Length: 141
Image 1 (cartoon, one colour):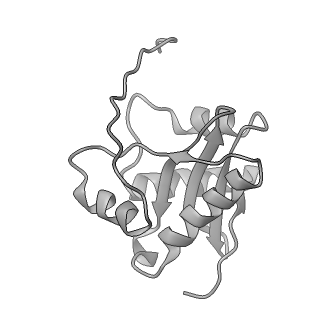
Image 2 (cartoon, helix red, strand yellow):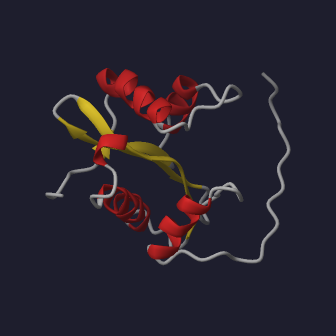
């Protein structure tokens, strides 16, 4: 695939971005995508990067950091554009965004049953680390 530019999402592209996430089965009932996008765009420690083909959002990654480590969410490639290197380019855009801010390590979460995605990240050089992820909901919907 020809070189594609990744840049922060713009207001008029949010609906197309959410459609991409739905097409990639990333939207969950307990996560409001509009709220997630607005929150990621609200400060300097996170953003949502997109790649477009015309007006169509064809790739995305929500990227951010906590001052110590980077993390990505909503990594998506439009089904019609998959297996052309766009996913790899999207992850490299997230890595670049983080390194430009001095972040030296990126962590990501993959559902254990999602073997295809795990293989994708392993091919990019990511590896499973022996960690236990724990969480506690602070604000209930």
